[in-house]
Length: 383
Image (cartoon, helix red, strand yellow):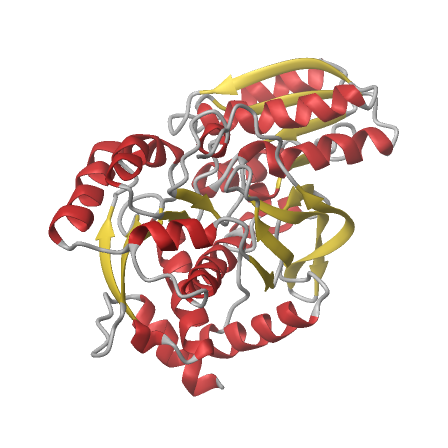
């Protein structure tokens, strides 16, 4: 088992060409810059699922680096389709890149399996029969947290997020259900995206608001900086921190250290999810990589599972693969999952979890689960 997944890990960092490949997959992810770690984790998960199923030889992977830049992502998508003639594209971390390639892949009628980018409109008003998502939509992650927090009797909250589409959508999802549950937002601020190194003024404003809770969305390097600064302000007692789970992702929570302890967040996957598929997945991943998997690993893993399930219907060309992805279902480490035929967005459980100390490290304690979270069509009308 360990030898098998060590091979998968090595393969995940290369464009793999199988001698008997039947399906050509364009892997379109950031492999340089801020989100390189996410791109590598998604690729690793994708290859892990193929290796586990013994089906790597059925697929030829052509890898391209988006650099998480919309113009670069569009240029690379065009190359994959027009020059490499791929049958399907998998990837996309940035919502901006997804927005940039949407019209091209829709017009070219090439199936795209989104393995991270969460912009709501991609499976809402701007949906396409050629775009399926196995990761999450932004509001899908945070609506359960608003509902759960209101149920705990919290009456007031302050929100912070970076000032770009995902930040707004994550906060809006939380606000919607928190207010429906009787809660009140006493203040909201959006920080300059990728340019904020000092969160002190924002934390001061949040504390001064008198809110009972602070809800935020930050990811990657911004999440690490924010959590550390929140810890240095010693606010946990008076202003407990809640967030979208990317705030304390298993991928980088160790870098946040003890400041992350006690933070409660909502996410579609943590390594401590209790089901047999996840136990086997975590064991195999740890054996090969000597670390815990993250939501990004699972998103890549499930992208491969969804693609294999579509191929297993007999689909072999672009149109047939796109059609077969609609409504496909599979057992994921995160729990039962399906692609909603009405929106092409994933239907999945969302977990409320607390980051806690375990020995010398940190882990996730699941506090609750909202089952089968499904987005409304929100203007989506698939043909």
